[in-house]
Image 1 (spheres, rainbow, N blue to C red):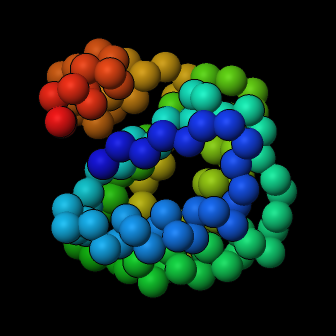
Image 2: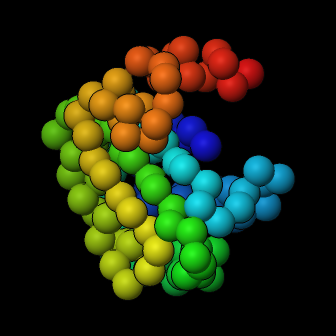
Amino acid sequence: MYVRFTGFIHVADSAPALEAFQSDPNFRPGLRQLIDLTEVTGFDKDYLALLKVHAKKADVFRPTEVETLTVYIAPGEEALKLSRLILKSWDGVEGMVHRVVRDEAEALHILGLPQDTVARFIDEEA
């Protein structure tokens, strides 16, 4: 599953996105995720909203026999800071494996995908 964030990110906005992800027909334990933060320009530091989203994550991603791999593309400083905040929100949720990389080809390689760019990945998914 591919998710791209752009512009200024509000942490509270991730709760509806999480609910939509959970109700997606492709959702299943172990679904590999590619989170693209390349175009993030900034984000709020709403720690209360982050804790609320974390509580929902614990319900959605309950421990299973299958680990869930999520790779974040974070080439810029703001994206890297946001990825650190996101990773903190996963503390205590078992069965999740996270990787943060600066380059899309590396992210796709970690996920075991043959494409070398996100654009090619999206084209083949469509």
